[in-house]
Image (cartoon, rainbow, N blue to C red; front, side):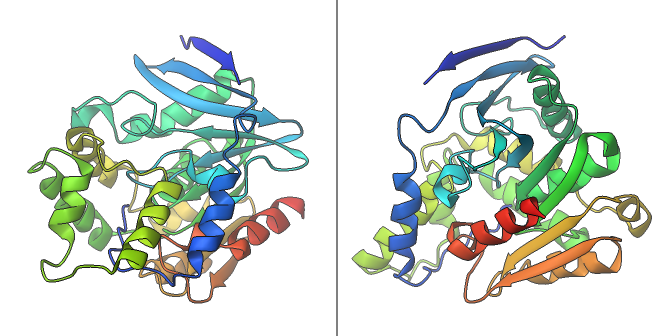
Length: 301
């Protein structure tokens, strides 16, 4: 039983700064976060955990799934919410944003897939286009495999055909997060000790982190549990991926180490198109005009 209350109104953490020109693009994206941006937002209870969503617009539904340690704030910042001609639903994954944050590993994994279904059920959505970035892309792929009737098309960006290497990285991140109190402490621990960004570069990095909805003050324990559980979602094999019969768009920045994993999906998916965003890294890619243009063009076809 899912209850709903509404009110009106992977981490691939890049610790090197993107070109400072991106500040302008990020600022434009953040300007879209007006008080009128979210037509309706609220929470549902999914297996006892509060899952936050923002729902706006009218037309075919697009469900947005954000990256590890981020939140649904990414999508207005990217320029994809609001989206003319579509109803958009952005979800804060459990452990993130304004959703509940249990600290047990057992509370995550496949539960994160069922949360998406629960929100769709609560909002009366039978099937949707699903757009995922990084962890959200991995979630979207697993959703399409386990609930094919709920997915009309997929945008898989910033992560793709993940395997043992990615599972190992998530395990490493889980261990590192378990040793600190906050996500900000984790970021500091991952930064080279001799590296100190110039003020302008630090400002640009801060803008990128904010645009993803990452909060340095967020407690580390729930994120550690999320990271430790993600092996349940990733590592899909060729047979599983081949069951995805809907159109799929893959997007990655050319400077993103995940780019190869996204492009590799062409080997298994019957209807797959890949777009590379030249010069963009993992944090910058979803905030570029090219990203929003690729998604809107794909959805419009």
